Length: 103
Image (cartoon, rainbow, N blue to C red; front, side, top):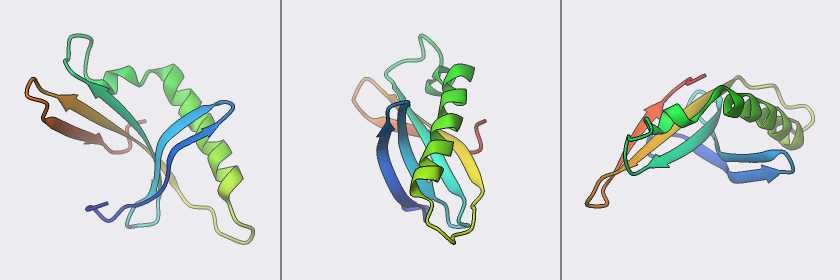
C-alpha cells in the first residue's frame, strides 16, 4: 500500500482455489499476487514454490475473479502476476522480495 497499490481483495476464494491478493497498481493494472512464506531456503526460495501448475491455476482464478467482479460498462484492465516471497530469519524478522511480472 505504501507503494501506491490499492488492495481490492485478500484471500479471494471460489470452488477452484484461492488468490492471496488482488490489487490495482498506481497505473491501474490489476495485480494478482501469490504470497509464499519460508523460514529457510533448504527447498528453494519462496518464489520457487510457484510451479507451472500453480501459475496455470492462478491464471484461471484471475479470469474467474475478473468475470465475477467486473462491472457492466467498465473497461478491461491489463493484468499482471506478481510473487511476494517472504523469508523469516531466526530472530523472526521478515524480508519480503517482490517479483513483478513473475509469470
